[in-house]
Length: 602
Image 1 (tube, rainbow, N blue to C red):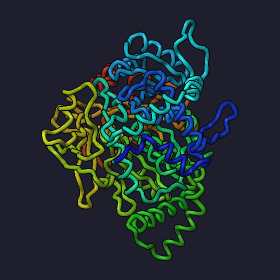
Image 2: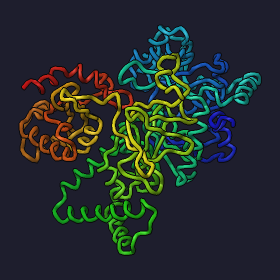
Image 3: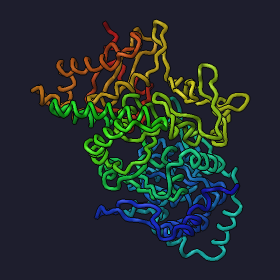
Image 4: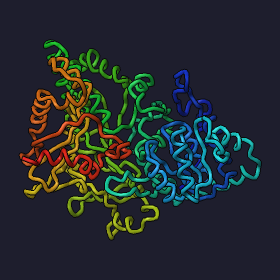
């Protein structure tokens, strides 16, 4: 089977021509600018020729260090045309992380997004012998004496002027591409150690794309998608490739801070996201409901009850709802749910895949009740994203869906989820020992996640095995389950659960500061700073009461007994979060050792 990605832009240009392939918000006017399939294909050609001129050979690695922008896709597909390997680096990566990946992956060319990333790329170039060229997507003055770095515009011009021999060379390379060619190296976030480059050959993407066509039958070329997760994240990368293959127009959100505006402007019918996005949506809706009068609250409560019965008891199961229920749902959908979806920007919604962390059952049920089709899934970088996801009919809330066609899942020792299939990586680049540890003797990939398969065939995640800890009383605790539950609360932004080898469970909590300020104003609580606010006894008592209510379903030994409120968020810059926004527990334990010890002092 030929590589789906290698000539994808050419095939789609032949099919769609002047139809828009993607759109992005052009600066400085802030208008969404479209790029046709024909223009996309032309730019891919030009960059592929330029890469050949710069000395890229089949198998060479090309680094991409930038926030989301259309040029990333052009670079990826131009690399595929040369049988080269694009290596994504998160835009927020530190100089040390960029240098590590550049050296480990033997990068030959590094594309940098803005001036800040250019300066980091320069540092990496000085320390990485294989790195020969830096290309900058944005136009800005280079450092004095730097006559080696080139702009993306100059790269395009170089390719556009390419001669016949160069063009034929690239065409020959594309024709010789095989499924076993490496498509990309994806570096894991390194929550417990140094990052590892997962080797994903084209075979993985061929299989993943075909599987998603088979499962996601509700999507077509008439859909539109908003790309806002980093394209360095396997979820967004694979999803965007899938959309392009399907002819789905992709809107590329350039700045994560603009997402709420962007989603309302483009009104996507589908969009992949992590649960944190929907947790914030839920918290915002709950905050708005809390400000309603009694009659309004009762009306919304009734609407949600009807929506739950209609969407979960009937539509979810592929059953026709009774006429009386359908009429009630149509009424509430027109008066309440459609307004809610419009405010978010998803009034034309089809499906909204979410993965990467647990999404609480409460939030998932609420969103489905409101007619927002959340498709919960599960996957890893090493599995080319999706292993399981909700089917269109018969999904079970509380699960991460059923296994996709062509993939096998087995529950191994310690209830570890083991996976086999064509979407599984070849191993970790330059790390034979880590590769060996990642697979069982008979070839099953060890996910590091624990779970079970229910009677319907759906997968239930129970914990991340490496995150699982044991209290000094011998009780095992799955911190993610507690963190996910507490994250439902509108006053809680981030949570890190503590308790390994301790007498009881505690938590470091980052409040939702704007919601907290609003509460303080309502209760006439005086404060001079955020520090004053989080140390206020009335605030602490309120948070304590809400935590107690949220933990009703947990065993007594699982419940958070004490907590510390911090006046600032965990961040990637401080090392507390990975680039995929996962908590780095060892860093948090080390950085907040004093606060943690204080919770166990009495």
